[in-house]
Length: 357
Ligand code: OGA
Ligand code: NI
Image (cartoon, rainbow, N blue to C red):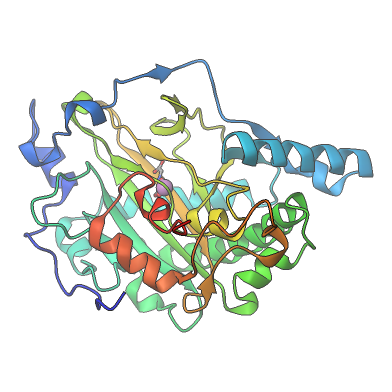
């Protein structure tokens, strides 16, 4: 793809948080989704994604084997699972979320200093995608880079609340470690040597970034979405949800399952790049976010990604005579640009990479 990054938003940016403070009983038309995309369709409220205790990974061989198996089943059946006993301090998790909640409650002028552009998306934003006239999602966000170090720029991180930079730094460090551990597990479960996936990601030069999502209260939650249906473009995502307020829904067949977040759990999901590397043995799964009328919601989505300028294609061990490579190679930089132009769009991005066979 030869397009360079778009320089600016196609329309003036409106902060959803300020709309939320102004709107009493209606929402602007730009946030009203077509009927088929609205939240009420096909809900299954009893189901939940699997919950997996990672302590088993470090227990006796039987416990380890059983934990590997649970993760394998969760990847095959759901592409989504919650993990507990993952080694990240509960205190750090609470600090990270609450620090960001405080950021979003700072005066608008303060936040505007960090306003982002579609060129890098870093900073304070209110839309994904740059299609003029697009129907928008009911959320604001803050996007920042951890890795590679050449992209990490703490000056683009908020100075307020004062703890923000330090907390973010530590949170990033811990989550990179946890992702490294999970990558080994996925590699083993795919029948590969434990280092294979990480190596295919570019070894030392992998990427990691975070989007903090802020979903303000919405007077007409049945008409809109906090985040439209999408699969995550990167490798793997660790989501820290607001444990007081559900909102994330995962597609299971024709149904949407509302995730019931456990306190201090991370929600793990497979992204498009692992779908490609695994030759679709693992699939990224569509998900979306619903909002509600009486509670705001804060979530931290941590994205673990391949090095951005190397070709990503199915690993050779998973390409077999009866299972040829399903995808043509593309760098993550190219892939991301493709998504930035169009915004969240179900699984259409990864589907369009299918080899023409
Ligand atoms: C995301 C995402 C879910 C949530 O940021 O990609 O899917 O619950 N977030 O905020
Ligand atoms: Ni997502």
